[in-house]
Image (cartoon, rainbow, N blue to C red; front, side, top):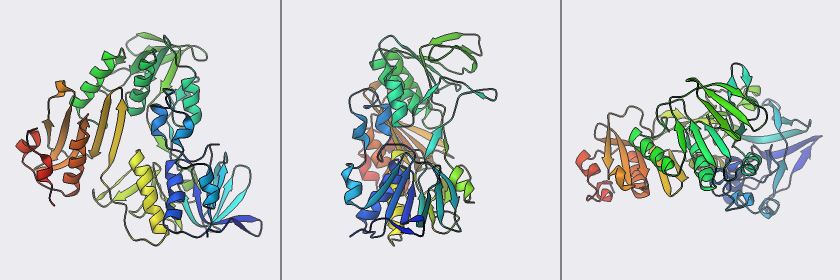
Length: 417
């Protein structure tokens, strides 16, 4: 049976202490018990909610189709029944790796045998010069979603800064709810960091068919107004009136605790393929990690549902004595209207793009290649192509470009068995 928390002197002790109450932290805790960990487990989260996953917050939950409790990873009873101590609404602010102690902002001291940092990331703030623009909303957690949802209504003018996945997912929900949506993006095309141009243009066309307006290659030079009512002035002099402004300009990994503890940090907490940080007995998982991926042969930081869950489970396995590295092809997805957009692999160094299917049909995919090898695939309502593409990437297989482009050719036949 799992042991309950115990104290050593005046300091609460856990055999495994997890900092972070999101998807990664929750899966580390659950994974430990699933894999037979019998020691004490405690999880500290700075939000008052049980461990949950974030993707539905910008989709079904924001649309009011599901309650936010539907995002919880486990029923609330699971943690007590599994002997997992939850410390919610408490922020960890100090780390002493020598003493194996984490300090919370209410001056509690938590001692550990093993520590897992699953602190995630926070939205980048919209700045004018050195000052943060007040009254801008961001979507990261449940409280953010509730604040935004309460302000969405037919006819409300929503301006979204940033044409990435979060911004476009909110745009889709808001448009369906009858809001007037404008997206402002500094690049000349949407999703420039993650998707091929042909896909980005198809995504833009889909949004425009639902009434969303775009301002591309545009920068904000001034923000005027108080509270939710604002006027955004673009660098070309255009002024856009808004009843609600959402910032979707990326995230920054929450490495403050790692820095305080002297861990190696570079675009996240640096960890190996087993989630081990540069300091003994301290591991990390999820969005906060810059981890070594054996499949790609390089370090990478991912902001995805897949990584938050599967890296967490891999770390849980290591803590239970398993020796398997976390080695998966990066994969992410987005749902917008009736569109399922998926992406797998990394196109870095790509020498070519092969289109499979007709973009005007609403179902197609783009394979990024390096020579005769597939290194990335993006599917526009083509999940099967992405699934097969992941196998081609993992196997580093060579495949004739004509077969990739031929929708009559069964791609499964190209996968080595």
